[in-house]
Length: 293
Ligand code: NAD
Ligand code: FES
Image 1: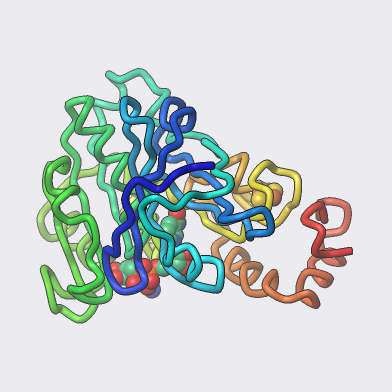
Image 2: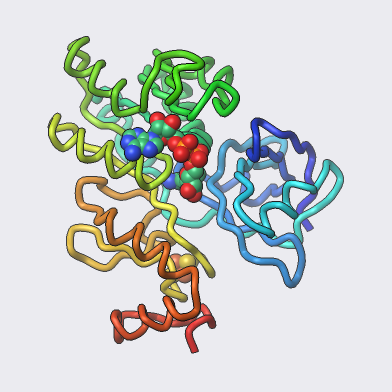
């Protein structure tokens, strides 16, 4: 069992939990994720790791309520426990394994959209701990939905907050801030890391392609097993079949087929849709999730 040490509501439908998971806390790196289950019959819920404390043996997860399982999760309190917490899963962010001098030689721009701000945080914190100043943009629909601003301020070089409705910080979507920084303010970046809803990552990549700015995205398609067996998280990247849970979740955003990923996300939700994917994807459709046959 994995005990919840602290549970708190960050914004409407957005919750943060600190969970005792010493082995995961010891091993995890920025970019990786975990899968949790409330009880034996619970749905497997993939969540990006928002923070970790190796000494305390805890990991911090942030999630948005989107269905019955996450609604149930949101009702858990400090002292309650998860039946399972599996991880760390996926590949760490590329920079975590590159020679530090190479990472230091680049100028990074991090972009977090809505709940996607949570997985951006450990990456920016990692940069800060390695003495690297990075620029960070946080975007949210409105003031009430801005999360982790104070935590991010403590580790970012420059922090730009923007809201779609202009109720806080700048006004407009994250893409408008990227364009302003690069085109109007003459800021130079070597790498952009953008994490948020797929539509945000798609439009960020369209812009950064135009600006000639390499962009890494973190993909969050439907996941079931999280170990490459079920095929649920299949994506096309550079014309090749990839599985977000084992090959990612981070990919070169300029190579990701976002339209296909978003369409597949919708289709995968229904039994009929999954049967259709099995027909379309033929032998490359794993079907191991148990939902197809
Ligand atoms: P949201 O819809 O509030 O969007 C967040 C920000 O993204 C907006 O404020 C805006 O700045 C930007 N954005 C949205 N649409 C855009 C567009 N068309 N062009 C440019 N910028 C745009 O986000 P939310 O409701 O917090 O997001 C929920 C989604 O994020 C869920 O689908 C969830 O699965 C996903 N998510 C993804 C990750 C990940 O790892 N990629 C992590 C957590 C959540
Ligand atoms: Fe990736 Fe099953 S979740 S293959």
